[in-house]
Length: 113
Image (cartoon, rainbow, N blue to C red; front, top):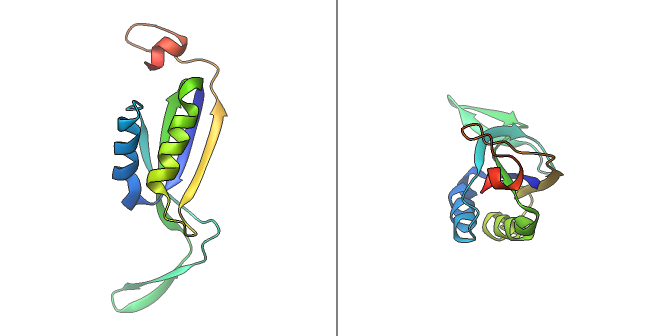
């Protein structure tokens, strides 16, 4: 099992969710996050004054998937979240030792189906 974390633009969330669903990867968790990467600071107007901000608004998508679905998941995120510009985001992949479905106590790969 793998854990895929993708940090993407909020405007791309719906596209990513639809593409994952189309590839039979419907389960995901979404967390709003702020951060900075290769993009430099940007300016916003607030009450008539310009402010320079460093942290960008992003969304983190978390998917726990089987090893067989890893490449499908990565390709779906890259295809639907990418614009070809700096700030598109990052994808991280981790190993998952175990998963347990609380309602039935099913463990392992069966717990994420």
